Image (cartoon, rainbow, N blue to C red):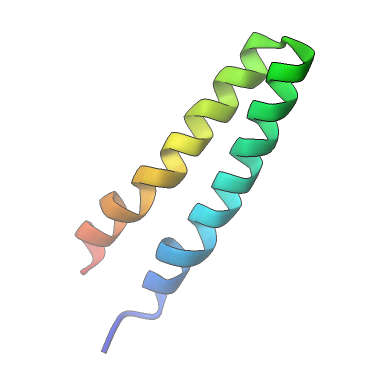
Length: 59
């Protein structure tokens, strides 16, 4: 039986981080705002790597 918290870290938080990361990437590239674009890229990469790092520690 899986730990209840794994669903949050594997399905919910990465989707939220990825969604806001894409919004910041699109907004930063259209406005030519480098800090917003960089934050969006970092947030999207965190959304991609986050489940692997957290779930390897939890499970």
